[in-house]
Length: 83
Image (cartoon, rainbow, N blue to C red; front, side, top):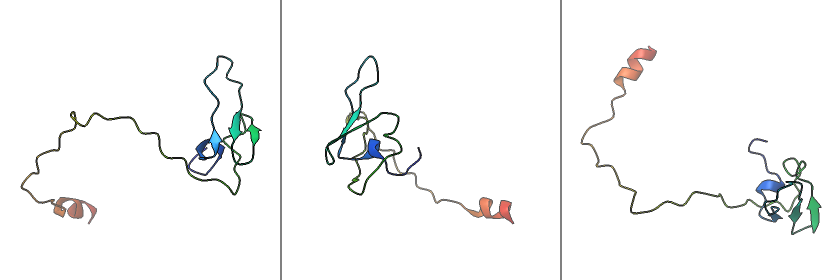
């Protein structure tokens, strides 16, 4: 599938609810069409708009910023290895 736009990544496409059979179709809210699950990864229309990413929730209390080290990034070893 890659990074190209398709119905699964469109903001107008409503994914089917989780079902036991897995054969339920997606629904395009813009075109008012049912989309077969096998074709949703290959279809797109000019109304395609990106769906916001689904990022995992993160507890801000768990995040800690690393203490900045008082040193400089040395690139001389990398340049010497290439030469």
